[in-house]
Each structure stands twice: as structure tokens, then as C-alpha cells.
Image (cartoon, rainbow, N blue to C red; front, top):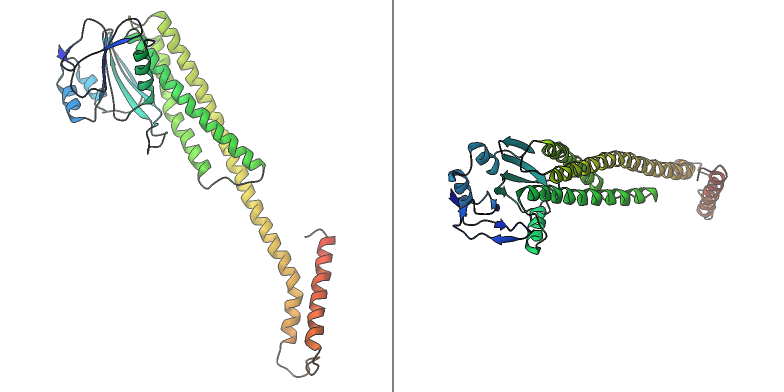
Length: 321
């Protein structure tokens, strides 16, 4: 046996009715009722406790201490080791840098750890505080998977809203801000990379022969896996739509470049005759017409303006301008 360590994030005992009772530091584990101890493995004191507690085997220590970050499911008799991932909502961090939640769970005890806070863990703890949370470790496992999936779904929906906004901008021939589409595409790809194995993991968990998982728990886990599959389909659709958006934006940029080049060509055509005539009459040779006339400059200027006007009318009639 071991005792509740110091500096826990949460340490509580399920009351079997959806509520909980706090477990004080130093209380013996396991207790007379199923318990949940939630830790920050980045705390040196917590890391020492995880390395020394007799409650855990070597595989569990490695999992809870952050030796691996990929989604993982290991079944050791009635014990299950899990590594799940949730969207990173911490300030100053990018959402696609997902947070790993590491779980050691038995019919009587849950020990979980993470490095950065997760909204999903707070959701489940809030349910317990209100008396509407999980009644036992099996329910807790379902609720934490459900909360992680809900938060991921909210983020995916937010990305789709951003894609819709960009599509509206492109339809109105406007260019989105620099780097915005690239950021969305990166987030879509990164989130999909982590949710895809997590979907398989939750589906496998619902099909594993774990005696303390009831039929209703298994059904809910399979429903969660199905929701994850739908989010993955939405992510695939988002990636495809963002690729189409990138093509349209490239077309808009090419069109704008061509339009400017065309305008410059038209302006050059307007000034080409005038440039030729001014160059011709600007040479310092004898015999230049009008060299002795005080009105020659104004006559020449009027001819240039008339020529420019005639060229402008001609370009307009030819629909070049």
C-alpha cells in the first residue's frame, strides 16, 4: 500500500452516486471506495513518488512519467494503461500541440498525470463537484474519453467556421490575411494526425475484454469512437477545402498580377508615340521644325495631347481599356 502524495492536482474518492469526497494528503491508497489521484508529472516531488510507489509496475511508471507521447493502450490483467491526447487550450500555446493525458486505471484506483492543464480533466472534475459525474472508474474512463472528444469536436468546428469565412472572402474577390490559411491547414493536419490513432484506441477499448467495463460503458465508448470517426471525416473535408482555397487564392493573385501587368502595358502603349516624338524633336541638330517659332512648343504639346486622346479612344473602342 501507499499514501496520497503531496502536491496532487486532484485527489478524491468516488461516492458511487456521481459525487466525490476529497482525499487528504497522506491517506492510504487504495481506500474503501474507488479513488482518483491526478498529478503533474513535471513536479519533481510527484516524479519521485511515481518512481517509488509500490502501486505501479515499471510499464506504468514509464507511461505516467511521460516516456512516450503517442496514443497507447496496454492491458495488464485487470489494469489498463492509456495515453490519450486533448486539444491544447493553454494561453501562449498552439492548439495543435496536443496535451497527453496518461492514465493508470484499475477497478479501484485511477492514477492520471499530465504536464499541461487540460479542459477535459476540469470538465470531469466539475461534474464530480456538482454530483453529476462518474460513479466509478469505468464511468470515469468513459467520461474522460467523452470530454476529450467534445473538446476536439469544438475545435474542429471552429476550424470549419474559419474555412467558411475564408471561402466567403475569396468569393468576394478579397485576399485573406497572410499566413491565415497556412495556419488552418497545419492545424487540420496535426489534429488529424493525433485523432486518427485515438479513434482506433477508443474503439479497441470498447471491444476489449475488461471485466469491470459494463455493457453500457462499452456501448458509449463505441459511440465516442464513431464520433471521432465523424470528426476525422470533417478534418479530411477541411483539408480538401483548404487545398481548393489555396488554389483559388493563387488564381486571385495571378489574376491581380496579370491585371496590373496589362494596365502597365496599356499605359506604355499610350506614352510610346509621345516618347518617340519627344525623343525625335529633342535632338540637337539643325533643321528641327519650329526651332525659331515661339508657338512651336505649345503646338507640339497640343499635338501630343491630341495623339494621347485619340489613342485612348481607340483603346476604349477595341475594349483594351
